[in-house]
Length: 562
Image (cartoon, rainbow, N blue to C red; front, side, top):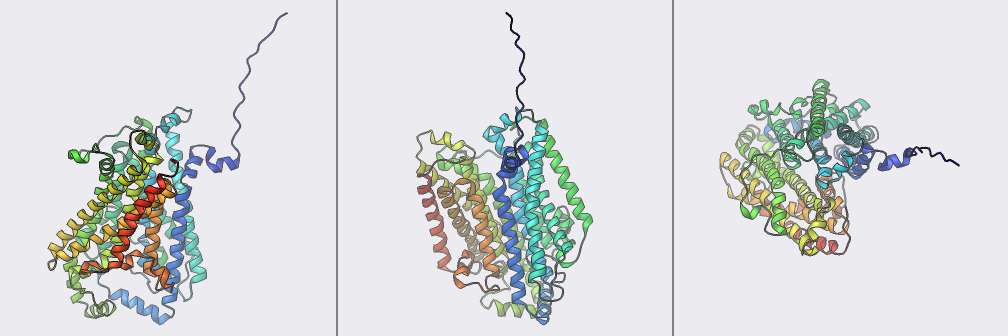
């Protein structure tokens, strides 16, 4: 009797169903989409609601054609130096024109920051975790891995901008009341496309250089280019010598593309798309051709021994947060230096506009507008607080990455109590925020020296951004301890943007006083003029210290989460 044994072919794996693909089990692209779903939904929802809110606020505040003309005359009377970071005043008597002038240029900073953080870490994060080696060992080519991850981010960015498009379309049809307020589909699409491309360009720059210099340095460089370009473009009209530098970045290229005001300039927008594509190709090829995790260190002076992270958990947090803190400190500090240094030009232009100076004195009777402190109170504080909150968000997210990356299991394997680790993280983050404040104060000090007059008062007033950032960071630590580390950074960013929104449009929307009081930025007084409100100081300290304590308590009572 004989037996024949034939080779049996292994059954091919079944293809994932559509539902499983959408849930993230269909490949690298689907998994990346799933991993970024919260950020995508959060950014799209927040921006959409903000656009609807500011549109409704404009319509409610300026209800007649005459009031709109008065608004246009007021904007025309504003000296160029005070217009600063606002957009070009094109058709500001219309809802779309005013939204674009007052708020439209600010939204790219939010989306660009998301794009920079996402694209700089989309490959680096898995390499740091060690999971990229397993993924690269599969039959999937490394180039395909990088392309699918990039396409996933582009898809998430597109989804968020579809929400922006929908919000503008709804505002232009349902909220518009006066002739000219209508926002057409072409206008809404023009703004959404521009917003998506300039944000993608910032992220693409970080993606291109991250394989060479590492994620931290890539975030700092891309953030500096993004933020510097935004500032230079805002002030190139008032300070013509800045124009050559402003036109190096995409903000300068597209400064004449103002679709919400009916003005289109598609050629520079196309250039932004080409540059973004080229940077993404560089990043993909660099990942495909270099060893995993291999970077070339950026030459910097060696850190003093207390800052190398070998003195305990607090020292380690300070050491790892130092590059991020320095990046934010340079950005906000240069911002303060440019504003404070341009104060003399601002005062000279005010003297040429006595009617506007009287108007400002009527609206802000206790503000000495013809001083460096008064100028900074009007121009620097509002935007500086937003930047401080976003700095706090990135520092909290960096601390929380110990848990999300899996490194915390190794740290807690040492004789290190959970509560001590959490408290050390809080203390180290607050020290990093202090560094941001110190560098900003130096920028304000140098700018005030250029302008002349009182120097000490605005320098001391810079402490307000530290109080605000510490308070927002405390909220992030509480969220990380109770809810989980993955949502800590986004939670701080959302709170920052929402409270800023409440502060600037709460009165126009006639929101209840209780809701308007939620904006912490409204409780500091006028710190650049030496007039402090103790409510904001006490609230900030309670949120900062209480948030760290609550976060430590919550972390000690839950399981680790990735």
